[in-house]
Length: 178
Length: 279
Image (cartoon, rainbow over all chains, first blue to last red; front, side, top):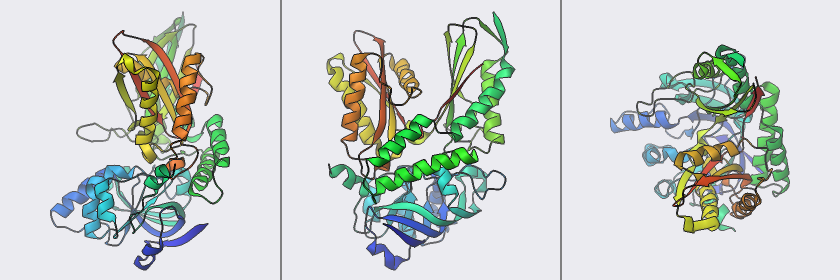
């Protein structure tokens, strides 16, 4: 059973999400991966605002360039763990929803617990995701190319709740079940 | 002696880069279809595999990449002993890669490791040349994504560790990789040789027909046992829980030193991409 949800997921819906829920997201998300996160950290260190609004959903992704006639090239998730060093500061800043793939560190889970959720997108399904993105607009750090921050409009973007507000982690549940 | 102009290899390399990125080999796609049947209706694992199969079909139909990580271009050139390559093979391979990635709208993922400044065209390729019988060149292009490459490792075991030690290396590498390597993975294993030769041996195993056992019985036994143990971990597709964490384990062994037992585990995501052509 797939649940259709707006994204960013309204705060009042977050407590109902459970690790393992299969969801389809429609709305607005912002891409940011390694290089953009390093710049976020610099901005926060200087007390400056981020190019991503508080309350937004960040998608760890770096797309292929769009071919003629495309909104965006293939655009699946990258490994969330590489952004671990930056994530607690972003949660403190007000980012409460992340989309990526794979488990986070204990420190990130602790910082997200009760405050933020993580959604797992399907790694390697980049072409499928491209068909669920209806608009793409660069927002910041355009010099970074694929690693720039893009605002994406998504429709029925498939994901799985991997870390819920109660601190349940689908990756830990998967290997402990056996 | 057959003379091949290096420049004549640019076009085949360009073509192979694009084909490898966009066209998932049929044996891999079939394995995903088989894996889906083992997963529970309505569960996350089945949903993931359904998406991956649809994704592969979309990519092939539109001739666009399966995955946005179009990888570092690993190129294998098996050069016939009777061939004389006139010109710069390495420059020709890089030119083929450059054309595919710039004109083909693929992601350029290659950069300087320290400055992190992107080279802008996905070059240089990683080129492995070896000499074989004949008067032809066999080219294989295998774009390697780094979600899985990052989870690969070389372990220099003590000979006393034996087969059990080898199995532990393989299974723990897959367990520790979790969802980062994009399971269900294909696991390339190289046993023996030296530190660097076992790593290359492991990578070459990723090019084999999926699930075809090694010719050596003792090696095939390791493959089978490792696959059983990996799929008993329960991680499943994208680590969300399920029956298939790996589609196949492909291993090979080569002679090593009396003091050593090197084991390389090269992790490959489910997009086990490669394309080949004879010139």
